[in-house]
Image 1 (cartoon, rainbow, N blue to C red):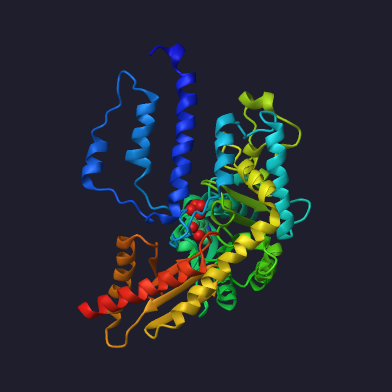
Image 2 (cartoon, rainbow, N blue to C red):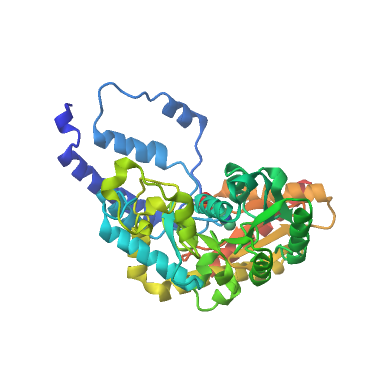
Length: 474
Ligand SMILES: Cc1ncc(COP(=O)(O)O)c(C=O)c1O
């Protein structure tokens, strides 16, 4: 092949069509498939023998090889019975939007490069800010995920509250249920573990505001400077929502930045039935919101929203000479002035496509369905005498533990781990474990719009069955 043939136009056109047919078929069969396709040592060994060739190969061969030997081996996180972690139930509309965005390959860091796409992304950001209850000065940008959204907010908080000579004194407050990306982000921006306070949670796994206030007072009296509190709008473990109004009152009293990690739960603001659960979120200074979770987008699509966009500009705006030609008067039009990335894809366009086609009412119903699924799961689980509900259905999460009375706590931990393993071996559903109150528990996170009540009933009956089988072996 010579360089004139690098784009292989005709060949690529035909393989794109083949790919779409294959992907379509796989997607239609998804419901009947197992939730995991395990890889074996033989397959891994085969992959590791493939070298980068000096002379290229046919695109059709390589594409087919990749479909068969690479993409096939995975957990199907968009499967209706994949109920682990926070699943990724991406809509086909998002997939289409993703393909379109990649096809046009927009450089969405600056307004001049793609003014129409930038306008649409900003319109979406403002729509979500409005939904949150933020005012005219708000703004934000699309980023790759909740981890980056959290870190972006923490940088803005640090730069707003702490002067340069106070950087070594700043203290941040999380709860014992806050997502690990927050403490990771804090460490990356120069806040060591010794200045990250983990506030205990109550019996519903919500941050205890009185403990928060005591911790802030104690840090002040030790000469430290509290600067940010991170509240969760839907924790990963249990779907708990921290008491947002009480936390915001504390932040206002002590002049701290309040960040809400809504990577998982902020999407409930789109629902008619459940948006009231986030009352108080409007008082926060910033919010992380993953569209690749409960807004049904492909990875990575997340938003950082901020009450006053000047605070993002303060931290991220730069004006190097080689970008002068793309400068415009209003910094906030160039997303590279609002976050970490310079070059970035127009991540918001697939969300735009999804929302334009589905409309808000369908999205609201789809999100409410997740709540209903978790409630059905809880009802089914309660019928089984050996099940303890550890946290009742909140958002779309329920946690529980098989705890027959004739075995030790250690054996119960092992039992629940083995139940999860058995379910994965069977492949019917993805149910994983977490730890709460020092115990191993099982967890269901049900945000897929195609999961049905009968799926849930069957899954619980399988879990019960595995428990009985495993208990006989103890
Ligand atoms: C509450 C919460 N925050 C942050 C994150 C991190 O988001 P991401 O994986 O998109 O970086 C997650 C991921 O599950 C989450 O559940």
